[in-house]
Amino acid sequence: MPQDSLISGLLRRYGETYSSELGLDLSGNIPAHLFRWLCACLLMSAPISARLAMRATRALADKGWTTPAKLALSHWADRKSVLTAAGYARFDEKTATLLGELAEKIMTDYDGDLRGLRERAHRDPLTERKLLKEFKGIGDVGADIFCREAQVVWKELYPFADDRTYAAARSLGLPEDVTYLSALVEPEKFPDLLTALIRADMTGETAESLGLSDRAPEDD
Image (cartoon, rainbow, N blue to C red; front, side):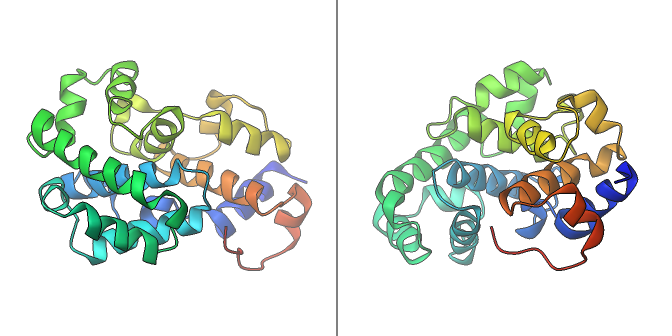
């Protein structure tokens, strides 16, 4: 099928980023939004569905834990209870600890503002990634997820794609090349395309189905 139709179908059906789904506007470089996105990346790093990780992220916000300072003041038992209720039961105890440590580290190392990590790294992508992985619970997968969508505002990360998106691109017959993929859309839409690739791959889409069907996406 024509490549333009494939890309159009991807973006039309699956092009909402995870951060946008959470109500976060990363393009504004707002500290609270960056913090909530990092928490989401930690939650999505576990071997659990994206749907449950997103539910758990929303549950943290519903409790008012939307900044490092607020989360750092929460009690471990309360964090565990919220995660359990959100369906994160298999990982609730460990993750409750990791979230508390993440918040405390941002308070201690970056005065409660994750943008300080970027400045400490002198806006060098490799150093930013290294500093992200100093947070317990944020490994290669979590850093990939963070950079995939943060590149919309931390411009030095652009163009960024990871192994997960390359695998999704391959399944749809697209080259596993970040330069090629980033040229398919405007820079500000690149995170949308990467998310669309991943969502489509998780639901078993093919190039043909994306071009022929307008049905709504299924839950992850």
